[in-house]
Amino acid sequence: MLTASGEVERFEALVLEHSAMLVSFAAALTGSRDEAEDVAQETFVRAWRSRDRFSGPTAGIGSWLRTVARNVVIDRHRRG
Image (cartoon, rainbow, N blue to C red; front, side):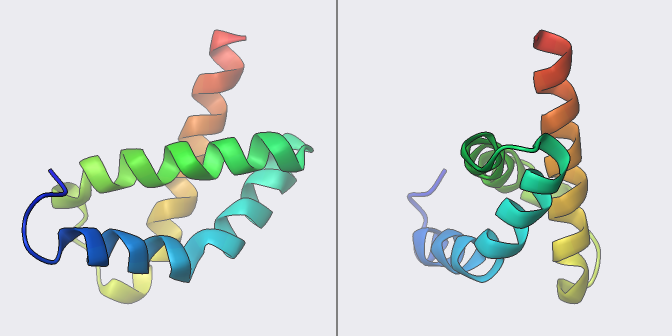
């Protein structure tokens, strides 16, 4: 939950640092800026919920977010 001390700030920092990259990446995958923004939002939520599973170095978080975003796009495509 985002109720623990400092959690909201950590989430906001993650979003601020990686939003532009993630939206650009998602736009390249989807061909739509609007859909890319939705994908990025869903990516951040999924990533935050599964943050305990991220075991890489902090520098690798961008790669991990791109992987999550790619999976979001695949899931959306499957759902139609």
